[in-house]
Image (cartoon, rainbow, N blue to C red; front, side, top):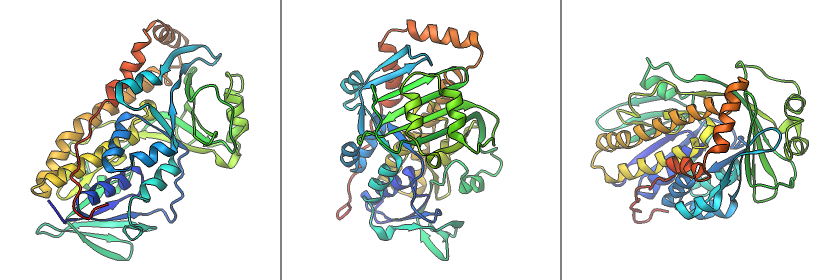
Length: 392
C-alpha cells in the first residue's frame, strides 16, 4: 500500500520508530504524545543486536552507533565482587556483527525524533477518542483536533488506554513484585567494565557505561508496590553500600533529584491479538515485559520495522495487520515469558539456598552459555523496507 495516513499514539521509542518506518514506506504520519514536553526521562538503555538491526532497517542505525558505547566487558557478579558469568562482547560481535551498546534514553529519543519532520510531532497532545468511521477510515480526536487516518498505531505504553478499549475484558498490567530505582551519574565515573549486573538476595544492581564517561545505574528490589522514599539515595547506600566497587562510587556520583523510581508492571496474561480493526498495538502496549533480558525496547523496534514492512506489502490494512499480528505476537510473547523467568531465577531469588544453587550453576556453566543465552533472543533478522520515492 502506498500513500496512506497513520496516527501514532505515543512518542516513545516504539512510537517514534513506527513513525519512521511508516514514513519510509511512503505513508503520511502524525505522532501524538500527551506529555507536555519531550523530557525523555528514563536513564539509560542497552540495545542488543536485534534492536540495532531494526534501527539499521529504519535508516537510523549509524547515528545511534556513533552516540552509543559498545559493551565488550562485563557480566554478572555477586555482592562481594566475584564473577558468576562474565560476558564476552567480542564473541557476540563475531556472531551478530555488533556488540550490545549502551546509550542514554534521552539521546536515543533525540536521534529518533531527528529522523522525522518537526510538523509530524505533536507534543502535549492527548488522544481521547478513536472511532472507526468506515469505509476504510479512522477518526482520531487528538487534543483540539480531529484527524482522519487509515491506520492508528497504539504505542501508548504499559497502561495503554487504546489497549483497554480494544480488549476491555483483558486484566491489563500487573505488578511484577519488583521495583526499580535508577539514575545517570552527574559526572564521569572510573569503571573497569562497560556493563555489569550484581545479584544479591532479592536485589540487583547494575550499570551501563556511556560514551561520555558517565554511567546509568539501576537497583531492582523485591518490594511491595507503591513504596517511595524521601531520600532514595540514603536508602540505596544502606542497602548496597557494602557491595563491590564501583557501586558506592556510582551512588556518590548521583544527584538525589536525578533518581527515578518506578514499580515494574507487565502483561502476564498474553493478548489474544495485536490488532483490531484499523488499530495496531506496539511495544509495551502490546507486550509489556520485565527488564531482566534488556529486550523491551528491542522488541518495540522489531514491532516498528515489521509493521512498516507489512503495511508496505499490503494489499489492505486488514491483511497487513493480520500479518503483523501473526509475525510479532508469538515472538514477543515468548521473549516476555523468558524475561519473567529470568527475573524469577535471577534478581527475584531471595532464599539463601536457592541463591546458592543458582550461583553454583552459573559458575559451573561453560563460558559459551552466556553467549548462547543472548543469541537466543538477539539473533533476529528484520524484513527489508522498500523506501518509497521521496521518503526520508
